[in-house]
Image (cartoon, rainbow, N blue to C red; front, side, top):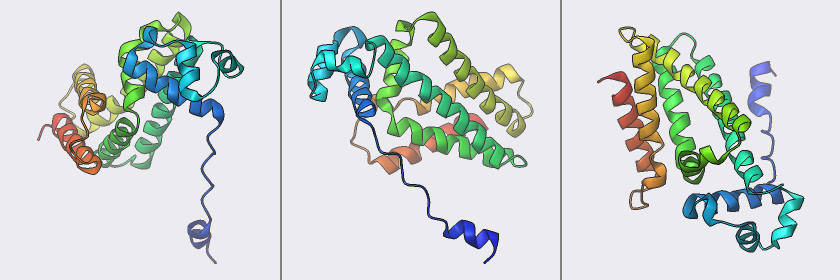
Length: 201
């Protein structure tokens, strides 16, 4: 059996089982996104999670720690995923751009509450985690800028950066989209709008 055949026959690893901490964090994110950070207490989160408020402190030091735990890993995974997709297409900038768009649209559709949390609550964080998130975001944007500058060499880097941020505005609109359009169709519409905005045709 060849190496390629062996790779194709390898069973993919089972997805990591969600921990109780993951479940509580997801509940907290949904509550923060719908009611605002200051509109949610630890007791509210505990009630929604089926535990007493004090029991939450076994998992998190407080609401602020939940906010950090929700936003930093997301920023890290976006940067890592973006770099992976750019690396896949080192010789084809248009393919890299299309893959980046697919990646981010999938993320935005799967995580509207996290996007809403980021848009409205990032400034609630202490200086250090907020700086860390901003740095990760800047690095992620620059992955897009580098690819877009190859697709459209007539653009200066600051111009490409403007378009990248505009594209994020399109893709990150998912917290404001209703469910009247089927998810796959929403994904297609967001991809189409984003590629037109970035590629200029």
